[in-house]
Image 1 (tube, rainbow, N blue to C red):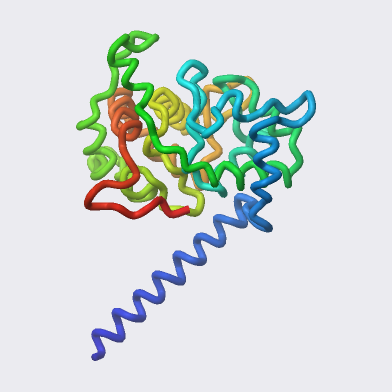
Image 2 (image 1 turned 60 degrees about the horizontal axis):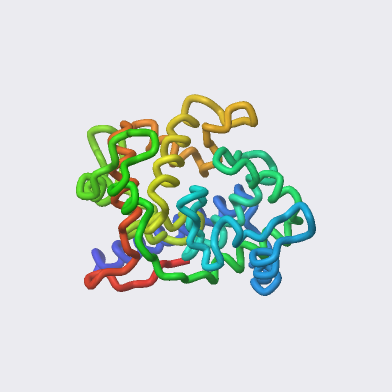
Length: 262
């Protein structure tokens, strides 16, 4: 009986610690207040706002699937809080768009509430994953001539990490197949290969070189430097392999049917 009570107390303490940590993270990143109006967000996503804000769908697709040609990321199934934080960071200059060079100006042209609305609408997009940009790269080769990642090698890192090199398993924060553990951890399973690879490389650079308008290839807007601490210990091959696995990973399988937790 005493052992049972100790286990219950430990579980309660762990739950309390997790709740407190989540609350601190929420306050730190400014994620508080309402959840946004998805109906208003849809108008901006589909039609834009005036001359300064083009329709999000123009680059990210109507269903939020992203574009291989423009290297824009998939937004479908993404976590609402994460999307909102990225828009806030683009608006403040904490994150720089070094692919299309548009997101900073677009986010600034939206009000705080409009950014929240867009995030709320993006969260409703549940477009099924249809292939990956990795498929075309395998047929045609990468544009920069670099070796393409190997799926089964990336799967090992995603599920078990590289303990000897200070790289934890991706699923420890992003859950099974990168479908997201909720809160501020984004869904990365099914994301574009080029985008995943690019962002991991940016986080790696961000570990030693702060991001700025003059150093857009660096990214350092991750909470508590979590991704920078991971990416800095990854080789080019590790990054390519992880990206190769995650881009083809599906959020549900026969043994893990649960839906993403957002």
